[in-house]
Amino acid sequence: MTTIASDTDIASDTVMTDTERTYPPRTAVVSWIFFDWAAQPYFTLITTFVFGPYFATSVAPDPATGQSLWGFAMAAAGMAIAFLSPVLGAIADAAGRRKPWIAAFGALLVLGSSALWIGKPGDPAIIPPLLAAVALASIGAEFATVFNNAMMPTLVPPERIGRLSGNGWATGYVGGIISLIIVLGFLAANPETGRTLLGFKPLFGLDPATHQGDRITGPLTGLWFIVFVTPMFLFTPDYPAKRPVREALRAGLAQLKQSLGELPRQKSLATFLLANMIYTDGLVSLFAFGGIYAAGTFGWHTIQIGTFGIILAIAGTFGAWLGGKLDDRLGPKRVIAGSMLVLLLSLVAILLVDKDSILFIKVAPPEPGGALFAGAAERAYLVLGCLIGAAGGPLQAASRTLLIRLAPKDRIAQYFGLFALTGKVTSFIGPLLIGAITAGTASQKAGMGVLVVFFAAGLALLVRVRE
Image (tube, rainbow, N blue to C red):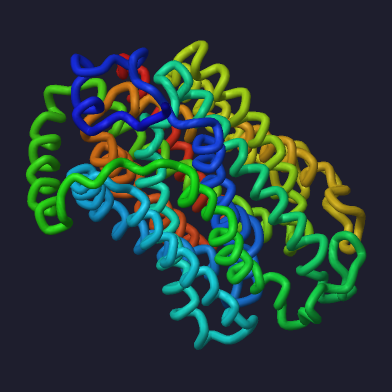
């Protein structure tokens, strides 16, 4: 008979060892993995490759202003996520169950994403409610992920956590690829030709002139989440309920206070959380602004940016899958360090690529209306982007694996809350610095350059962590 370990079992290895503990069937594990598939279109379609660049180039007055406004909205959401994540995680640990929290914050993701349909081009009045909707969806996506991650230790034995995490990220990337193909191939059309990437007229009569193909990514993201998160609710076992929410609130806050007091004595865990705070801020900012940066540098629109996103997601899928295997074999710390080194070098190289130069060497700029990625600088950006995509998945997957290895098992959701805290408490700094520097210099390149410091500092701290 397959059962999930009780809370007492999780709290003490002396009660039941990992070899004695039983785990749920494969169906439950696969259903859990599909959460990443369900949530990924928010990050792929909205924050990175379609809606974010569309907002910067078509809704905002100009790309630099759009990048700064988007950065301020992401910063506001990041602050809310940062300060509430550990509190909610502690309450969830005390209450026991995870699924109600995933459902509640998943609803915010669905509502916020669906509201993006209102984002018509060239309407300044729509900008404040549009950014509010993006922030709401971001809060929902991030909080739902915190509680989904906390379910991992009860699904597979410890020696398979790395593979589970990597497979989750890889599956998410595949979901992102498919959602991008749907949007580019059948929904979003070039305003000049009225045709999608595959040469079709947009489905449902979507109007290219008003960018309805870009705006539909919001409702599509909400519907996608509802459909594909359902198996997790149906087939993946939850933790058993322990106490009512009011009691859990008191107990959770007390446990959080205790955990924060213990952190100075847990040097490796504290150092890792600090490193995660810095490099996650850099990674999230890089993904959030990569498409916007390409739109401003090369004049790319939805078709080019979306195709770029598909290629990056394919690279990310293989990177996450391979990273999961290397995680179990070499340990998550080495995977994180290697991924961060690739990200750092690739980012420096990207900052030395412009539409008419590569690493200070002059090249012919792309011709207007030319073939897709025909310019040498565009192809260089594409290669470097693939390296970033391939490294980003293993970095994130191995990070949650390393946390599971370092954190107390009876307070895993609380520590995933602290993990989210360190991933978000300064997450407003990256977008805020990018927004402020971009606004002050009117240069997207100057704004993106600040991310080099984030990866270098995160790597230096990670070296001091002992698994």
